[in-house]
Image 1 (spheres, rainbow over the protein chains, first blue to last red):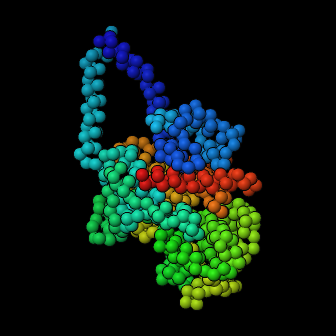
Image 2: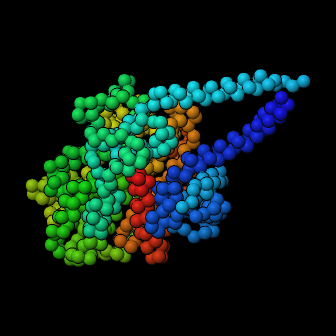
Image 3: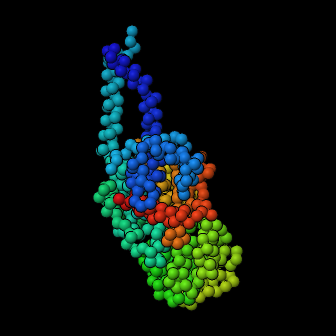
Length: 102
Length: 424
């Protein structure tokens, strides 16, 4: 009985974090499909555009933040990255890093 | 002492489980039917992403053709840099890998109240949600003397396929020293930079194979997308070969006469060896059925869901809609399709629609190793699409040749990746 109450309490306390996690993955599912148009299905690119498959979430976040700040050279990514806010950047980084590696 | 008893907790868990099961049951008993009209970058993408988001959906794609020939990179086909098969796709991947039912027919009528769509074979389909992404049709007769028959003499090549090959053959057959005329229409039309990329690549072809020839680009407009980039490149790469005539300087067409083989502006008459007439366009017929268009030939939508502003339950995508500031591009159509698919899945479940991010990137080739781009990221504010500050813009005008070369490579890579995204 007490055990169950305790479990439920833990679940209730965790709820805000679960909601946040859900939002990040939902946001990722919204933003990531815009990336694959250039970077290929699941981030696996054919040709000169870089693949995203080998990158960690930290790699992707660092790159996008640097593109946005124009401290990393690019042709088009500095324009695209300016359209993304911090939540979008975190979400896409998490999304691509969570895909199975091939 | 405790407020929660074991019975409460168990009851809550049981209740939640039952609620989940009954929703699940409702879904499995009557799968929602979504009918998508048009198997291009908008419709094919939407069908695929609907099934990816919810494999229980019954998705039918209506497309008259068994193969899809892309307009992107058809300008490369025109001048022999690619062959037509390299820009041609089947629907096998959508059918086999994604469980989409293909119906090769043309949608001819729709009943927005009865949720039914009629096909040219006489059959009707009932839908819970309808997606129309039929693209554009040429507005025959809007330009005096230019109709479907005239396009066999002066091809538009604005639907890729037979028209592309016709214009390709005419360019090949032309003798060195001939005059090529391209005419560009007023906005809006499919692929804003298309006429200028085409002029660039034809100029490249002429410079390489028929250097005494001349290319005249007669434009209804005074300004166009990536103008500074195109004009800068033309001055460097094709001086004396490619001449652009703006609308106010006499570029606007008055009429064409295919019998006489002439193209007329208000002031001049030209008798080109090859004429490529890109005529005014409008949303294809099915997108203008049941009062879906704005009376000017295009449709408007609520951009969070891409649902029609006229009829509920009907969504519209791609070149048939006005989604300003998003251009009528393959990228836009592909991107809108994903937003629309996610919204439809949410609406069918009674779940909230998430805030979309909309995007566009368009590459144009000025020469095989010389690429330029325009890009933009968009959000929805109120019921309007607005560009995020700083995200909209073109490649720099003064970029070094390595950047032009890299953007040409990116253009090729983008094409391989977007077509994989849509058709595999």
